[in-house]
Length: 254
Image (cartoon, rainbow, N blue to C red; front, side, top):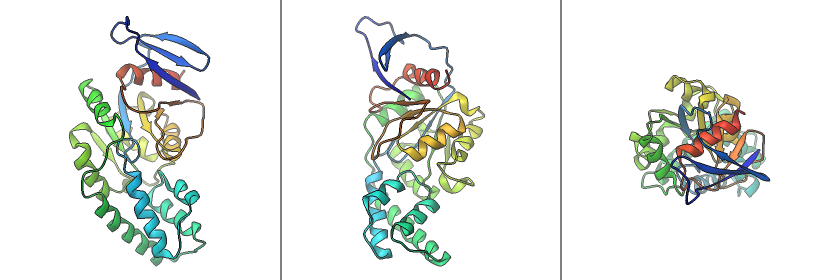
């Protein structure tokens, strides 16, 4: 795992940045890495929507008969809908019937749709990062564990014009942490996943992207992401550049 900070020198040429990793630093220009596309997670990465999910999940827990613990809530971050329901019931010590799981899923979707029907706050620097990647001519894909019905609402805030493809959690066999969503995103773009940089905020999402073979830039939001080889960390998306993405690609696949 490499922690990165990018600093623009006052006298630096365009596209030349300093990369500090661990104890040393290296001068990086071009990187020799070809970033073919960027695959973006949505909740907690582009949109500050985890707070809305928090409201819905905690209310669902009360509907099912008890308060949700913080440990259970943290385990839910980034989870696909079936896994989220399983974790929620398990946290309450309930072994649900198929009918109970179905009813809980329908309740959850109605509540989340209601919460996300208006404007959703952005994560710092996310709007500018999307615009930067689009201006650079790089293809972009939205890869989320959120269902299509909710994602469509979120796209009203994000802007559909920023994405060449979108992949939702109910459109793949297995959601994150399985690699399926990222493999599908790369497939729709006609690219090898190893040529894509995935931007994630959660342990679940970073596991999925890495398993698919993507280079992974992690910008943590609600919970810490464990350090693992190949993950590159950044405090926010503010000031993100194509050169930064190339550095992520180079470090992940060196």
